[in-house]
Amino acid sequence: MAGPWYLVRRILAVVISVCALTGAVRLVAPATGGADGAPPGVRRQLAFLRAALDDGAAEDAQRLYPEGFFFLHALYGLTWVELGMRASAGERGTALREARWALQHLDSPQGRAPFDAGLSPPYGIFYQGWSTWLRGGVLRLQPAGHRDPGEEDRFARDAAAIGAAFDASDSPYLTAYPGQAWPVDSTVAVASLRLHDTLLPERFGATVRRWVAGVRQRLDPRTGLLPHRADPGTGEPLEVARGTSQSVIHRFLGDVDPGFAREQYLRFRDRYVVSPLGLGPAVREYPDGMDGPADVDSGPLPLGVSLSATVVTIGAAQVNHDDPLAGALAGYGELAGVPLGTPWTKRYAFGLLPIGDAFLAWSKTARPWVVPAPAAPPAQIGWWWRVPLLSLLAVLGAAPWLPALARRRRRRPAAAGIPAGAVIRPMSPAAPVPQKNDGHD
View 1 (tube, one colour):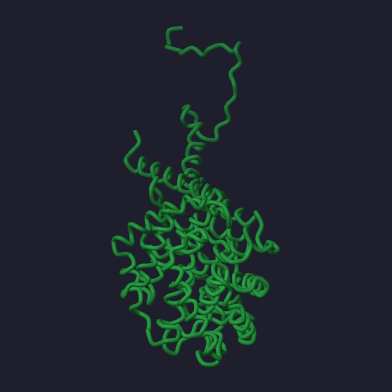
View 2 (cartoon, rainbow, N blue to C red):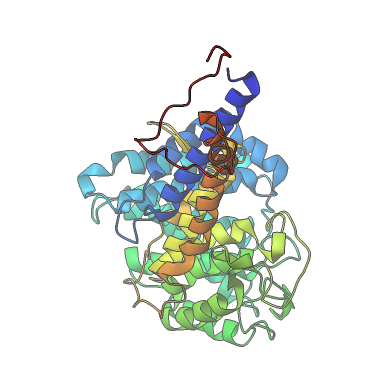
C-alpha cells in the first residue's frame, strides 16, 4: 500500500508538470496586439490597478520612488487613453472617464508635492511633460469640434509654458528638480509639443527643430545615444546612456522626429538588447561590455539586465514597428512575470508591486500618437528564441516522473516472481510434467 510520502511526491510531480506546461503555453501564446490590436489581458490589469489605487497603492509607491504617486496615476490614465484610441468615438466613455480621474490626481497637491513650483516650467519638466502628454491624450479621445473648452485651454497654456522654457534655455535638457536634468524628461515634454501641433493650430515647430539640433550636438560619446543625465546649464552628458531612460525615450522620440528616432532606436537595440544565458531577450541597464550600479529606477541587475527597462522596451519596440522584439519581450514576461488571472483581474508578480503592472499595461498598449507607424526595422530576433526555454520547460515537466518510470522498469520482471535479469525460456508443450517422488514406487 502506498505511503503518505508517495502521495506527496505524486502531487508535487503533477504540480511541477502542470506549471511547466502552463509556462510553455504562455511562452507561445500571443502576448501583444500590436499598435492597432487589442492587447490581451490589459483591461483586467486595469481593473486590478484601479482597485489597488483605491486601496492606497499610489501612496505606497511614493514611499518607494520619488515620483511613485504621480507615475502610477499617469500610467493608469495613459493606458486608458491607449485603449480608447482603439475604440470608436462612441465607445470611449470609460476610457475618457478614467483618464480624467487619473489627471485630477496629477493636478492635486499630492501629485505636485515632490516638485518645485519655482522651476521653469513650473514644477519642472518631468511633471509638465508627463501631465501635458496625458492632458493631450484626454483631448485626443474627444472628437474635434466637441472637445471640452476648459481642457483645451489648459492644454494650450501648459504647452506654451513648456515651449517658452525650451526657447529660453541654452540646453535642450531642462531640469526636473533643482540642479538636475534627465534628457528622457525633456523628450516626453517635446513630444507633448508635437501633440499640441497635431490637435491645435501649429505653434512649436521651430522649438522642436531647435531641440533636435541641440540634442544631436550633446549625445553620449560612448554610445551615440541621449545620455542618462546631463548638465542642467550646458546639456553636456554627465552619465552614459542607460536602459531605464532609453526605453522611455524610444517610446516618445518617434513622435518628435521619426528619422532621428530610427537612428537612435537601432543603436539602442544593438547595444542594450541581449539574450542572457541564451534564454530569451532582455534589456541591459548599461551598454554591452559595461557594468554599473543599480538604483531605484533600474532595480536589481542580474547579469546586467534591468527588469524595468525590459518591460518598458516592449512599448518602445511596438511604436517602432519592431513587432518581433515586442512580442518576444512580452512573451518572456508572461513566463517570468508569474501572472495571476481571474475572469475579472490580472496581476503580475503576485500583485506585490502595482507600479510594475502599470508599466507593463502601458507598454503593451503602445502606439504612435502623432506620426503614422514607421516601416518595420530589420528583425533582430527570430522565432527560434523560444526553443531553449521550451526545451528547459520540457525537461522540467518530465523530470519528476523519471525516477518512478525507472523504478517501474526495474521491478517489472520481479513482479512475476522471476529475478531481475533472469533469462526466461518457454517450456515445450510436449514436455512431461515432473511428478513428485513420494518414496512408494
